[in-house]
Image (tube, rainbow, N blue to C red; front, side, top):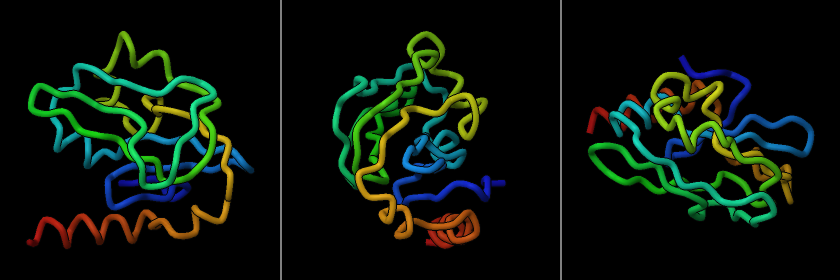
Length: 129
């Protein structure tokens, strides 16, 4: 269900790391909880992001949800497709609907995140309560 090459946060973000660059998005679970996504607000290239801090918002017909960075670093890319097509987050949250790319300040931060298996267990546990 969730790609093994990604790491996950308890706030339902994912990151896929390639050397010192991380691609960040929201999980399939997050988009299902939000419902139909109608707007995305993202940082600009060059903006700093801090682990566990907000860097943008995703707005659905139901709610506005903050997006938290799983790592600390600098934004090197923003998915401009989402400005005109925020609904991509509903159809392809782990693929073409990534949010930002970040140059990692400390690649070891990723080690603190959950694997796909751990994240799926976390969701099951969360739903049980």
